[in-house]
Image (tube, rainbow, N blue to C red):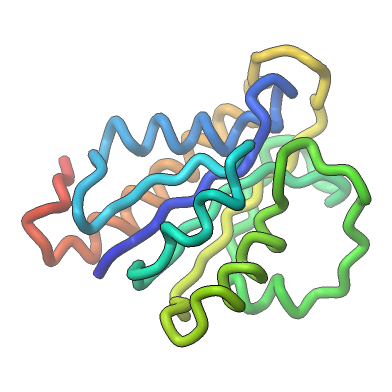
Length: 165
């Protein structure tokens, strides 16, 4: 099973950088291989969409605001459930492309090659100031998501290409 790990976020907007942080931590634990590919979609989202072809599963991570939950709350939901929710998307995003837009474009561009196994991990955030630090609750939540994603990758590691601890 080929898995694409997609991280969204802007690392110079404090907690919005949690996606790239999770990606870097997970990559240290489970190195990229022919079966695990990492994509940082913070600023190069459109260039990456075509590279998603051939993956059987997507694991997605991004920050989320406006949930009413405290910073550091983790939401882990299959993408098809989130895609059905009503949208009140803002006009301006903190990074090039929102995860839901990326999946929408990928669905159209990949056609039958679009995977059905997609899990989205959203982390509630509050601090979006211009700086490069994560708040302690958001970083702790990011560490929990790294653990969840590592388990997902390693539980399906039927390939010698995936190195798990």
